[in-house]
Length: 262
Image (cartoon, rainbow, N blue to C red; front, side, top):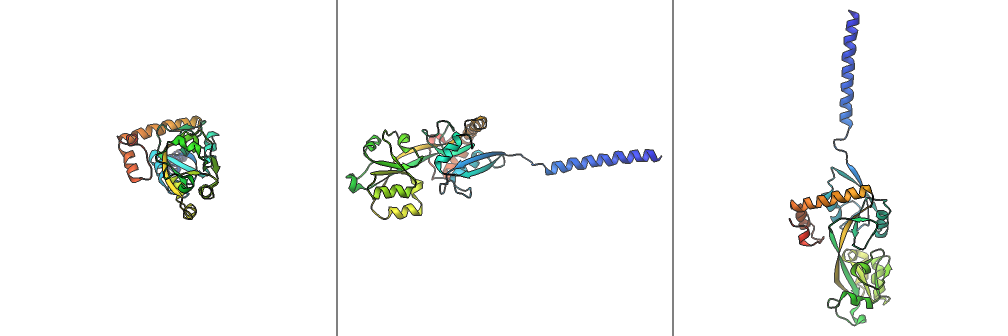
């Protein structure tokens, strides 16, 4: 009798212990495992803010939902961001022109355009506007643009430009007659430091070109899979109208209408 009772007790106790173990593991396990994406990018005010707000991060979360993908974001300058992607030290970056990072992959569709602004002194150059001049005519000027921005090749110029460390340096070189024209992205001219330099003299700011920019991926197995997923997801967002809605709520980002409308 005692042996039967003992066997019954052991069966019940062990059964309950197994159930408790299984329930504990289910409770501790994540409901959905997320894939980590290592993003390296420059900090562009309003687009890639260091608190992970901004239009580009909004776009990234639209394409890669946070419940499925977690972001590990590293901020650097643009040149190092390109190098990290080409060396496969990061998964994703922003702002690649068609001429940047030949060793990396790019999304099929651009997500924004760099609005290239020419900064110059009209009275020094003897011109009133660059709008009536061809892009190739810029080859006759002493040009400069930011380090790693590669605007000369992206626009299609044959002349080399002087690469500056910051927008305020580029504007100062124009003011001091060291160069003729500084080519800058519109967003880079909005900082207080640059505006303070611009107010010192009557320089002209004139938009002369727009360059499509792309999300870039490392050219490895993970990057290839991520690019494939990205391109498929964008097509889905375009077809269901979410992509057009996103651009309506983010007017500071510009792409051709036929790329976003269903």
